[in-house]
Amino acid sequence: MNRKLAIVGLLALPLSAFAEEAPAPEEKPALTGSAELGLLYKTGNTHSGDLKTGFDLRYEQDKWLSLLDFNFLKKKSDVTGSVTIPGENGADDTTVEKTSFITTDQRWNITSQTNYTLEGDKNYVYGNIWYEDNDFNSFKNQSSISTGWGRHWYKNEKASLWADIGPGYKRDVVKAKGDVAEHTDSALIIQAQALYLRTLNENVEFKQTFSAKYAVKSGENSIYKAESSITTKLISTLQLKFTFSVDYNSEVDEDKENTDTQTAVTLVYSF
Image (cartoon, rainbow, N blue to C red):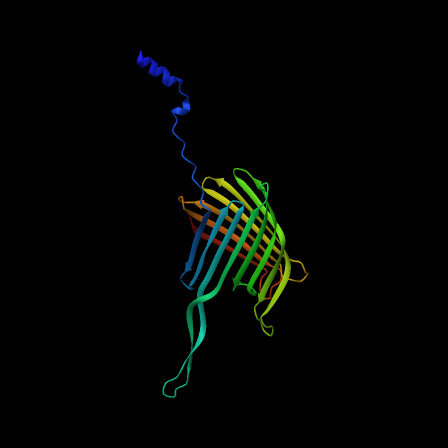
């Protein structure tokens, strides 16, 4: 009889009494980031080496989102030049050609942006700072500052689109050339940016960014940048990244191209 009562009592309990307590959801860290590294080295008739590295940090807390992105590119190659060897015991000096493996060009840039989300979680205001030091183009360095409004325009399980726009100020330090000394050009700009993310499958993600720093006054330099990348997950924290980027300056020296492109393959470690 007691056994029957015990069985009836068990059957009367709700199913939730037999379910294991669900584990608490894992709290997402406020600070996340990644670091990447790529290297290309050529030997044979010529020697050259390219090093690409960088990192990005993301801090998100309540309505605040801060992003910091740093990139560095260095190129080394064979350079042949004349070297004078002093003569001994009154002999004439001798000039010979010598090839050295040295740094020929390098570029680095840093971008920082902070967003504050407004009511409704779609709109935000932002502040943006950018600086670039580039041996590949006509400018010793370039920088800008901007603030404005943005919106998270689109989001579903596979894709997201952000875009923002606002006024700003740009400063270009132009390299000396011939009779023209190094000088600084400043301009008011309208800055527009967009970021599109799409998950192709559980291991592959596509990312497209675009930014425009449009000089308000005619004849002043405007800067346009676009980058497309595909990231493939190798293991949980290591990815392989394919990147194609385009940089365009509207006003450059006659011997320089307006457009610079770069294709890179890097390993990315996320933390």
